[in-house]
Length: 207
Image (tube, rainbow, N blue to C red; front, side, top):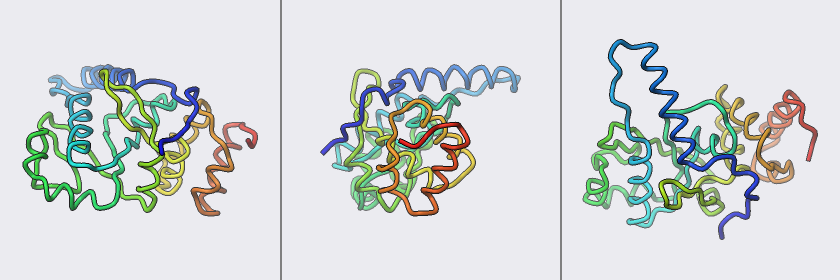
């Protein structure tokens, strides 16, 4: 059953997120390099990954920085990250021809290497099966892409506990409809206290 995340939580569609990322990357490369390297095609690689997952029956959800941008994160990202349901690596290993036909190197199944030059990370998370079941549909180039529901995205970032995750959580909290009770169900005590500390720091009251 798909999530009933309020539409108000969706701050941008994926087309807008990728356009912002591409524009920012081009400006950065122009400022820092005398010769600007060709940028990986994020839209093509992301859609090829989705097409691959759907063709061989892997349930998935987009996570990481791009998913955070969907829910309001202002800083751009060049990373493409997915979480996939259990047994996904074995399924990929069993379908090398499908991987190749969708533009991916079939010799690697723990990370996806696309012919465009984009590297797609497959996050490991103990709650992956629940995350993909609760994913929400977001549009990209006229088709539907499953994106992690915002409470799951925050919970994943609390578990990862990196400096950039703290920032992403604060940005999503400012713009998405996040309920404390749902977060509490999806993290442990220490992670929940970290969540409350982030809310306090950015001046949000409990909901």
